[in-house]
Length: 520
Image 1 (cartoon, rainbow, N blue to C red):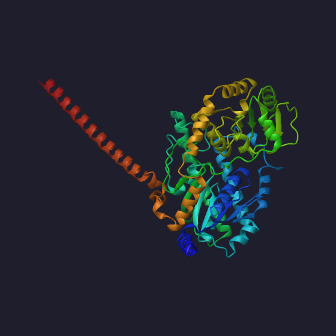
Image 2: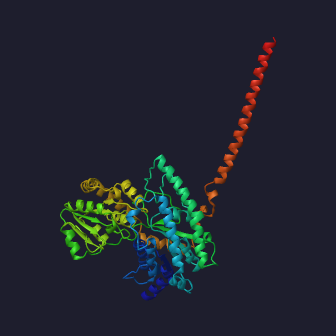
Image 3: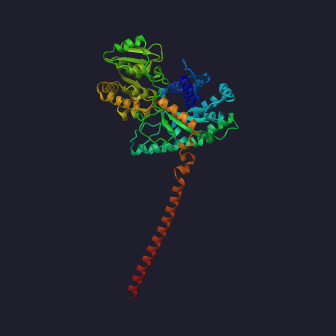
């Protein structure tokens, strides 16, 4: 009887917990982006889904239900950045945001074309495989949303950097330039008049570039390989759900339409066991440890020699021990208190009680991890969203930021002393950590819930705001503004005409009176 009841329960509940077939598209050959896609894929596989990942990197220990389709050749596209390989990203620090925006559109077009030209992608698209949901990383690759159309699947966009212009327009999410700085700028939410002016103009120019250059280019790339495909507008605005790698503990509070869900922090896992040498290094650091990593895209060996010398001198003179992620076998002039490696278990190090400070480039993955684990941060932002993240670090008061090209011994020493001696930074980091942890469910479970939700409700069209159907002139009410200006113009003309008539009439009456007096 018990077995019968169990079988009946399984039969009833089975459809509720049945896994979906998910295709994740994260082909960008940038390891930080892959880390997020990989953690999302593995997490969803552990929730019972059948996950297929299209990417340029490989997971060594995939869980059950997790399959990777590798696009190794796309990593070679990085050589197109320059003649001999990946460029020195430190040289991007002073690049204008306009240049960065144009640079990203060019890279997006290049990778989108390379993606569709890839034989493995072509094989997949010509296969008979079926998927319930296609999750596409939203990063200058809008043509790739075609995969959802091709497989007749629900489309989910994933933003690696929280709400921003690139995803807001897909779901009609408002982005008020008076207090929401553009992703490529370094402004605080409380902007000055000039900053708001710059933010507004930069945003308008970005929109012009998106709608009149980038989207047409993506549409051309799509139809180059699939002439029968619908127009890009029809595909990319059919987004059922946006998952963003953001949270109010790190990002400022901004509007979210109903089908935009924050899952920031989902990639942070319980700290793994430290290797013996690292554990001894951290355990024996009676004065604490400074962890220094510039992420996966910046190569620390490419930094200017002058800045490297300053870092070596200042860090070498500290009483704290230093773990420095270095991309070469040797660090010339390495101080005795510094330990280097090409790779460190970052989350496990930040979780250690002796880790007192994280020196970072300000990338969002590292920023999320340091907030999650409650460690203050000193940021050296270089490019992309790192400068905006640095502004948020200062806003939340759990760290400081220095412009890398302007680092001196004096300001570096001052920043380190302030961060390591003033307990308010760690207190604020822990407050932000509490906010990040205080959620009704784990972020991966939230992603699982909403993905199942849009499938259950056939794309959940009831969550989509009407703004996505409006052309820009209607959304910004430019037609009403034009009519208002025309009306004001006519009113001004009428008032001007009447004023002139009244003045002339008064002048005529005055002249008549003077003439009458003369005659008398």
